[in-house]
Image (tube, rainbow over all chains, first blue to last red; front, side, top):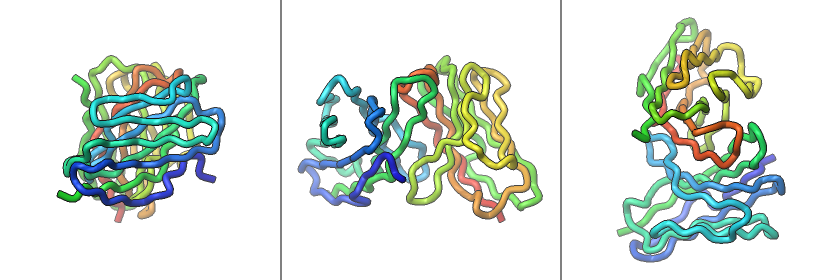
Length: 113
Length: 115
């Protein structure tokens, strides 16, 4: 059973517009969430994170929103750029010892020039 | 230096071969990880080393054998692999494995093909 879900396997967005990537989780023990970006033939790169005490975290063009009651988070990229085209993994963990990070299946984002 | 390096980048091996994957980081991180990623799937955790001790073994087959010679190095020894073991093997490190909030930094991966 997938504990972290990304229901859109792919997303296409026009350059300059907003990209919204969604993630849902089932385990209420998760209280720390991360987004990773992965280009082909490279390892995942950490993008942004949020802990459950916050509902929003912003870093430049990237903003993550967390809705704990809905067990839902989203990553907003504004404005989208062609270099943002990559696979985006949502990941979750708990703040207790040795909790491992659980990755979602990923969403492939294509930003069209 | 926020880099995790992995060698080799690509590896092709037969089912009777013995090979090793290597991972190195110089960020002073005390936790290192091996992940396996199949095409179009998320990374799956295989092993965690925290302070050079194996702290989680995900019941990975014994044909995969991790080794942590020191806090900067992590090896994955491969022996008698199967074709279904072909995948991208990712190494990662974090400041500590005891807290889920520690960001993991990933290496570029080794693309392994088992013939």
